[in-house]
Length: 118
Image (cartoon, rainbow, N blue to C red; front, top):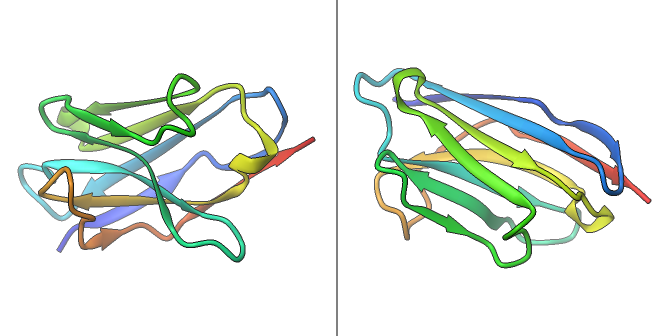
C-alpha cells in the first residue's frame, strides 16, 4: 500500500509561484509514475502533470510552459513548480501514483488547496 503526503499549497496572487511536494511511503522501490491532478469546484478531476521514474513526463497543455514537474527517486518525492499562476489554476491539487504513464494510478494523496487571487 502506497501512502502519499502532499505539502506546499496556499494562497497566491496571480502571476505568483508555488511549489508542491508529494512524498510516497510504503513501497521499497517507489511507484513508477507519480504526479498531480487537480479538481476545481464543479469540475471533473483533471491531469496536471505526471512523471516516470525515468523522467518521462506528460503535462497538460493548459499548464505547459508555466508548470514544471520533477522527481527525486531517492526520496520517492515528486515536485510541481507552478509559475505564472492564474486564477483558473485555483483547485485542490491531488498527488497520484501508479505504474503506467497513461493510466491514472490507484493511489491518491489527501489533496492540497491552491488558490490564486486576481
